[in-house]
Length: 238
Ligand code: URA
Image 1 (cartoon, rainbow, N blue to C red):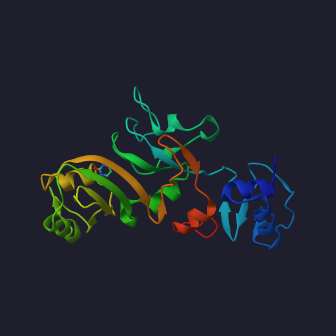
Image 2 (spheres, rainbow, N blue to C red):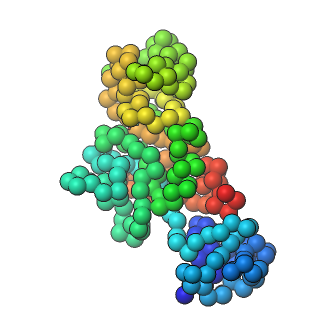
Image 3 (cartoon, rainbow, N blue to C red):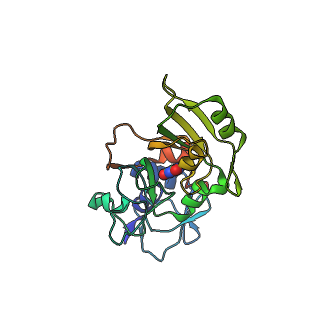
């Protein structure tokens, strides 16, 4: 049995004080009855709703990792190290998976969660959430490449959505790329079409949320409720 305010705080990634306030404001129901007591004891079978939306007592977590090279974006790897293996013991709850994949040699922002609906709503290719990367190239960019990226290039059989490309240094060998899809090896293949090789690739942003500069490679931290809302996802309202 757990207290109602603790379940709500855990589930919505908010503080206990915020959860208490939510309960006192009449937004919470317990087994279809309005409830105003934060200390009510609840079991896993009890049905809790916030603003009419059912929540389960399962705790959802949202983690930002700065992925190093050499680990794979998977929940389990037979012989290879996964991003889940890198999480500190205390963060490793059941059902975690990386929402969206980076190549083994790509570094940067990986979002890890156990909330399938979140992963679908925010990261499905159909939702066109922007992903921003820095790419180090073996040759400089030119206007032709930028125009091809921005007009929605043909890649094999596929016509891609327009992508943004801009040079970040004088030599034009460091590029910022913003894509709205997540096709296999997409950025490397887009440059390869122009005979440019990507030497290093790092994801620095998902939607409007930037990779925390304080995270060293291999480190992780929880994404806050405020940041989730900033990304357009509010577990209370969705
Ligand atoms: N595009 C790639 O080529 N690789 C990644 O890891 C991500 C985007």
